[in-house]
Amino acid sequence: MVVAEQGFAAAQMAVVASVAEVATGSVYRHFPSKASLFSEMLRGVCVRELDVVRAIAAEPGHSVADRIGAAVATFVDRALRGEGLAYAVIAEPMQTEVDQVRLEARAGLADAFARLIEEGIASGELVEQDARVRGAAIVGAFLEGVVAPLAHRAEVTPDRDAISVEIARFCQAGVAGAHAHSSTAIDSRRDSTLTAVSSPSEPEEGTA
Image (cartoon, rainbow, N blue to C red):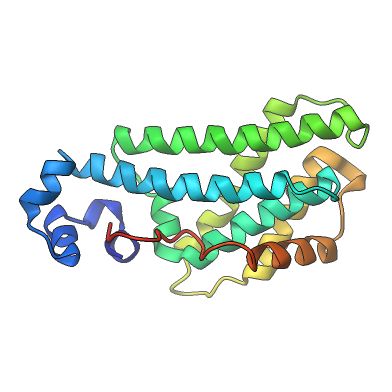
């Protein structure tokens, strides 16, 4: 994939067209600019990752804290597996049009976690807190937590298990405090989830 190998900024429409085996003009007929092409690609990636988080959040039979930990650990694990594409999607500077897609994706993730927190408050599992603020804080924490490992992956191979569990435990503690669950529970939930979802942060089709 062009973006995974070169990043958003370096990837050129002509290269995308060549990999797709179509004329550059054909690409421009569908996407008037590089930003519009990459916005659409980014939107597809973000929707898929949000669907994974929402699926974990909706799983019955697990505590809110467990579901928060599993959702965070799974997202982080998938991002670290996604490598160059994940770094481009999460951190690489890009045009306003692309950044707007990122903001919408973050808002969707924050909403998913806020709803979980609200559920936990209503059931008595979690103490009273501002679910919207803490949902957004969870998203900020795990997105920032994967940036450095992704940026330095060429020098040091990220320990996906250790990083995903550490970030998940941090996010759990942010809403559950002393009631945050153990890394063993997070490992078990993340591993069972990964067997049921597609490869991390990789478009199913296409060459962008």
